[in-house]
Image (cartoon, rainbow over all chains, first blue to last red; front, side):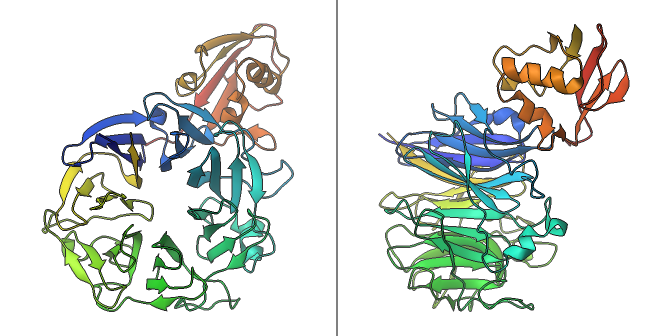
Length: 357
Length: 87
């Protein structure tokens, strides 16, 4: 019977929640990575490795790796860093993508590092140099911390040379040649602020893939759908309680089903009215319905960050999210009902799921 | 031979790294280079590119705040401290 693992990145290390294919009972392991702040933890389904992007305020950024599903870990930062003479600096590693022994690492200030040896060593793959908006993230005055990182990386399911990168506050970019050249993929998105460039200046929070042609995204201003793999976008916010949020998940077997967690905008960024709710569309964003069964409906001012929601690939998919106050909620029935499977973790940055034999 | 005292946050990251290490070196930077030889990757945990000490890594030589260029005497005590952050 396969195991189902939730990889939980938190402010104080990585944790693993483990269940079987039924996904009813969960056992917690951790904390791992010596309690370093973990911004993203992912599983490579081919090698079986788990990688965790972590940034210690004392000891800098590194990628932790486990070859035994989290029982033991090593770390490496060899090659993760800009030239000593560069005004750019790596303040933290913020996003990961891994497959076939290859690891992509998104960092702040914006750049993507690559490992071809299962996370032993890394080299700079791209800074998206020359892209519209890059003058802002290359400006010494805009160096981190606090400015403009690669907040997410999304691999193509088949083509290793194609992937997408989100530059925080700038937009999404696609490469089809392994990171040599890039194209902004933000047409049709909304922005409620002045933008110096036609193609960028959008605040893309989360990008998810539904099938060969369809993507969804949660933006700073609105939910959006693309039916041409991100070339053009249509807003699908109507019917949701707010336009703001971070997290999103696309159903693995139904291209019209998509999940988001709307939050109050502004400083609060928690679930509206203190009622924990995941919203689901089953018709590609024409209508939305709240999913609340099993979620706290009173005084639950929960926040969910951009990498802290995921969905598995079982026939009846499980949906999962982690909160900024340390709860993990799980559904084994496509979001129809929920249970709290961890209650007292540190602030959660990311939740990813892995199914292993 | 400098008597280098390392923070407890560092030792779990490297197999066999003790809290106290004797190092033959003229400066703090050279001591860290020597530690890097023995435990590859250790320098990155203490230094930013530049190189300079990471902002929350403080080093004291014989109780005085030090930098990478600070010289070491034949029996200096070097304290490496993970400071300030971590709440």
